[in-house]
Image (cartoon, rainbow, N blue to C red; front, side, top):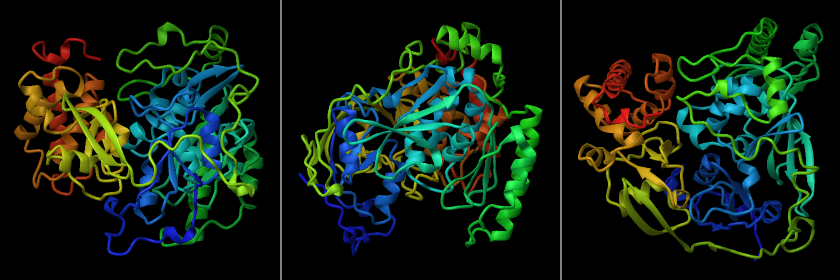
Length: 533
């Protein structure tokens, strides 16, 4: 089958709601069985689908995808042969992070927090709790959105990106030189070094200062990287004057952006010189300092010291951290199974799992009960929940994964159901606000579902709602937070609730309700005390 990329298809279809998921054009869905398959499909014009939020936004805006290639693990039909994309490991003196690793995992992963705590700290600023739980390193980088954070952070850290060519060979490049039509496998970050990241309100300017590079985002179409960093602050400051003029648009003028860049660079250089960091953990947890002795210990043993264990965090280290770095991540992969139409040859794919317009069979657990459906590949989870399962508590608000009204919990993580395709939930556990009734009756007794009834009671007691439209999303987000953290401080609560927009309450009553629910869940009689994280 050929992948067509007719530019005329990118126009928004007539008669459909603008910028709505209801207007998404049908597309084919390919499930690759190796990295080489995925690389060939992407080089031929298919779209890589990792977290999928940016893909959903492009489709809402009228672009037509010839095909999507899922790179994450959606469940029982997860692609095989792509495990390296979900890996975090040490390889010959560098930290490898796979392209399908989520932002939340980079933020909390014990290995990252041990060898490069500055990265974990910087990653906490990306999006919000819901975006971080779904969005991925690769999706952030390959969206080529000048306002996104991963590019300047990694550029300042001196990271090297690893791409796979359609023939299975490997291409390495700097962040600023990444290609548009190749499969990103992951990145390698040196263990030595420290990055400080600051940003203004998006999309004006962002600045990351590393030992040897300064990277500037938001203000240009692509990240601008200066060859000098904190190690030569005087030379770096001098180079700022040689930068091209920043963008002049409705968000900010060129002069304002240049002033903001100067201020942020100066601030980051001061912080870097002082060795200062923001809170590196979650809530009251302190950051692990970038101690050379700890890095040496990790490099020699292949894993973080047990003394760094933190029971309040998921202890996840993907892959085998003790394995030596392979000569090439792509060297072992099978040869390509597709030819590149872009180089004059028609692209043919070995397996078209779901051609354009064909329904996808999904099976999941919805509020603790088995649920199955046959849905179009373009159907969003919010419609499956509402129209097929008949549950009305999940609402569509902004329809752009911003407001949080559509929040559900997928495997315990806050997820924007308006920007998550139904097939992404295949084989997974999905909780909606209706699960609170089952939990209160004893049907669900673990994780966020166990916290949900107490959060609902606290919201009612503190009148933490008015119109109620956003309330289900707020309650589910708070339940996910309290399932992960026994006693979150107010900063952590605000950080998580920042992902949900409420125009009525002013948030104070919501915050107080979450604090009260936290206290109730820590009582001896709470079900959360048995096996609580």
